[in-house]
Image (cartoon, rainbow, N blue to C red; front, side):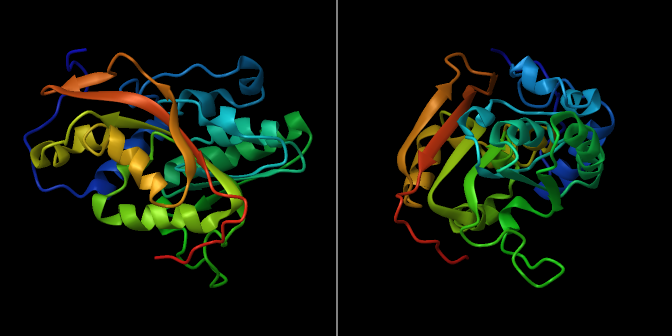
Length: 270
């Protein structure tokens, strides 16, 4: 598919975090059709979620399909909260869902929706934490890590890992491994590419914040989780047709899953 959406300025020195914050802050206020790629979700699970939350969700897959009853879920880059609220219904009253996001507008949107969803489903098992997804080991107000070691059964994210500054990716991956309990799982929907993205495209704020120029190469994404000790790492969803093609580079949506061995111990970070 030829490049047609989200025209980009000339390459420039880019602060990736600032570019993402600005764009997603605006997208929390008004729906933006150009962010990531639309995905269908179970309408029954969307029914109890406020319309504003559903409309301002931006993703490229459905990692919630890999969540089970009773799971302790961590949603990285929880945004409007849609995926978290879907998970809250799947895990039930015995499970829990923690969303992590650093965008104040998105956090306000998701937190405001908690009472309405809790009232509709009959229990409150969701919280949203202010923080960077690569810095889950950063101290909270009590001095403890934002997310405790081995406290999570499944880490999911939806088109968010590609937004992290490349210099912070090693910390991001190490923290995902650290917070998972033995036998813990990942379900990561994201955008991957078939060849390396040139630096000049990585310096484009629209392409970066639009889930394009920060994409992992397809094979390298799998290898990154294998290197962490995950087993059966594979793509359970992979779009046959590229979502976008930019200067001959194919970008497509995937969902990666994997699991730690049942006897795996939590690792230190970072």
